[in-house]
Length: 335
Image (cartoon, rainbow, N blue to C red):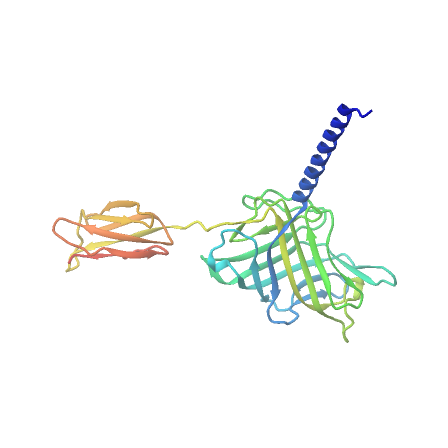
């Protein structure tokens, strides 16, 4: 005889267990998943990133050219970007990644090489043409092991790294990778255009290809002091976070709009009312002083305004101007 009460409760328990399982899976997925928000690749086809073996005493991943490398940089999956920041951005990359920790080999016959980077890693992507007066597309900082990153503006302090970020590849190979992710590494992203304050997971993945090392080319190999042999490489990579960063629109600077109210023969006209109507339709009034001077302070730049003047015995033509900085000679001459 089937115990209906038991079977019903078994089904309820099974259903509850399935709901709990899916909830746990969802929470793990949401906590661990990251979405790419930017990528880049070199544009010249040249091997513009180098690892320098400094006579076996230490090493550094640096730019072949001191001025940096020209790259194609692109934001992905970021909502609200202005048109100028959508699509490929012509940019310059710089990188500094010093190390005083020797490389190690693993696998059969030392088939794999791992070069830890023990110093502070700094990577920057600068827009070649500034937008809204700024140019930092992305800055990446990765702290050394046991070190965190200090607060930056609204950002909190970052916890310490528990592992180095390493250059890894096959011995004799012409490719390698360079990856990092939180919480194993202490990683901070910053930008003139994106807000990362809400991100709690961050990661980067570099791919080094066409790697040339040694003479003749021996590929990736151990060199003096058991650091990697010096090499040049072509690179590409991507950056991800959870949640995604947000577009951070620039705050318009406050500027002054000023000038003088004049008669046709150049004399100042006192007690003239001057009206400024801003881009939102809001109006402000000031009165010229005894020499005809007037000033509007704290006008938000980046907008088009209409300025007009009125006096009992004089007529003036209104002026439409775009405010991008202080205007000091917006004069009105009586008609």
